[in-house]
Image 1: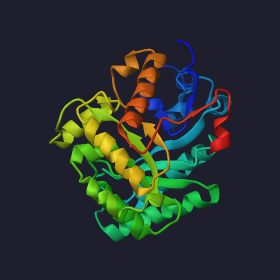
Image 2: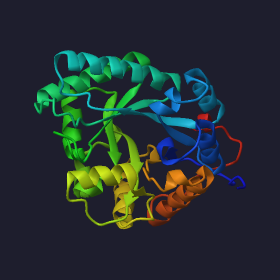
Image 3: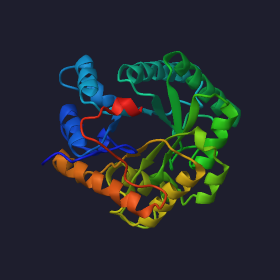
Image 4: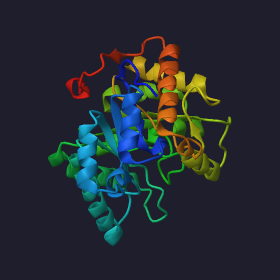
Amino acid sequence: MTQQTGFIDDFGMDTITLAGSLPAKLRAMRDAGFSQVMLKASDLVSHSEGVDDAVRAIKASGLRVTGFQVLRDFEGLAGHLHDYKVDIAKSMLEMTRAVGAPLLLACSSTSTHATQDIDALARDLRKLAMLAVPLDIRIAYEALSWGKRVKEFPQASSLVAAANCPNLGLGLDSFHLMATKTDLDQLDFVDPQKVFLVQLSDFMWRELPSIEERINTARHFRVFPGEGMHGAEVAAFVQRLDEKGYRGDYSFEVFNDDYTQMPPAVVAARARASAKWITDHVSRRSLPLRRPGRSAATNS
């Protein structure tokens, strides 16, 4: 596959979407014209040459790191379970810093052991944010559509507001918005400056009525925007964010068992086509391209 002629500024890809080694994933993204990458912990710890070599490969790729994922089930625990999760969070934060990521993504808890008390949840998120302060890392808190207490972004937004930390904000995922059918009018109550990351995907059927269907689809059958049944909703979501003043990153988080059986370059090309599809359908954005060879770091 020949290298594309420009680099896409606003859109990146999650390594979750691609098969192959870390260097192969990074190369496929770069060759498709992407300028940024969303990393996951296993990119480092499962790298055949070790964590330090993985970090070197990421930095040598020229891709700006959008963020690092994912811290799960942090908030709402007590006693030894809370202490355990604090240790896990510290390790995740160190890896986040090592790869030069500006933020760590934390998902709303699904643990049956977690309290549903809002004050306790806010207190734990505040503690997580404070752990990240010395490392100059932001925390993006995302509502999972099967979370125990927090299933929709308005709930996550209220919790972030209650925690009241400058480096704590929201991670918004179009899949979860569509799975829960959250009204986009709720975005009117969200400060765009508190949206730290937006992840985009679609899926192939209209509704996900059960928790089991949401989990299975989220982990195995997402598709790129423009390929699924909710294209109009995804475009409206991006449009509303743009009108609200969001100027941050978009990353394609597409868990798909079929895509991981395809060459990374082929899937990355589909991602680029999806970025073009989105910008064609959102009136206030155009596909932003940079000259080849210009470092992504100059725009970070």
